[in-house]
Length: 377
Image 1 (spheres, helix red, strand yellow):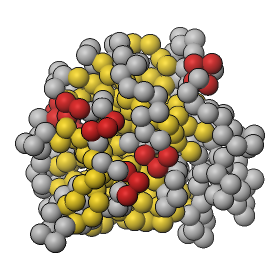
Image 2 (cartoon, rainbow, N blue to C red):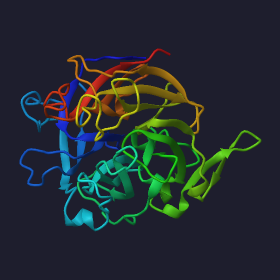
Image 3 (cartoon, rainbow, N blue to C red):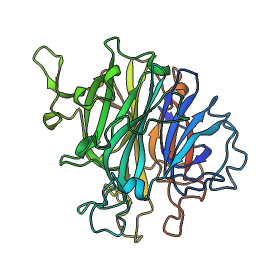
Image 4 (tube, rainbow, N blue to C red):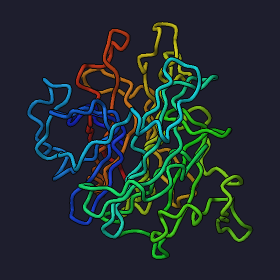
């Protein structure tokens, strides 16, 4: 594969899991963003994406920290990520002065005309050993009008806890039209070897599945439990004995997985923040040059597999993922499903943050960043 260092910029925020809906548009949920004329600072917002990656039409993107775009428009009302509403179900963990409960956009998927948005509680840098940013619990909200309005009580707020706190739905084309004939929805869970799920630099991924008409029913989820003697995967309702399908200690960070019809493969980007000397080093941890790491650099790997449970193969790696302006430290790579052609694809990511301790990140990079990717079949 080849990842073009040239990039395009759009709306403010991060994560941007993206799904392709029945109406032909794509939809994405962003965390920690700010928008024009928005009275809520730093909310979680839901956006409609119309057209292709070069048609976003963001005239003020190089002059504003909160650019407006003609073809990326916010749906409905922003959701406050801090305050009493979040405190009701997002615990403030630990003694760290970065212990601030809020919410993040974990995953989004459109199935049979219904939009499902997985929301995760989130906390900055409370991990005693590695100062990673913790997820959990997580839950799912639903919409029948592509995000204009939401059923905020579609599931319990503790639907996914512990190492299941960062659910990532597998995308199967427009409105799930390429989904398995058996009706399964597959869900990955990046997590640690312990009982936690973090935003960055986890250890492994678990795999779950659920019938699409039971997606809101937590007790219907099954979890991968290894391979049987006949070569078929085993499944269990008990997530405590789930077996990882992917292991990459302290280097596992995955935002979205897509089924690619042309290659009949599951494709995703794995990213990890690493130090100047190549060791895992997430954000909110000191290093040899800065009091807080400036997301020194990112290792980006592109992965493919013939089945949701693997085996996995790396077809691209960059140990210093940079844009063509020299900026580095990007994170949460996502392939919007409508922008995945046979060999030409577009990848979305984000960079952060602004300030003197982050000298390699321009002011307008905490945004929807788009890069072109070519794969050779």
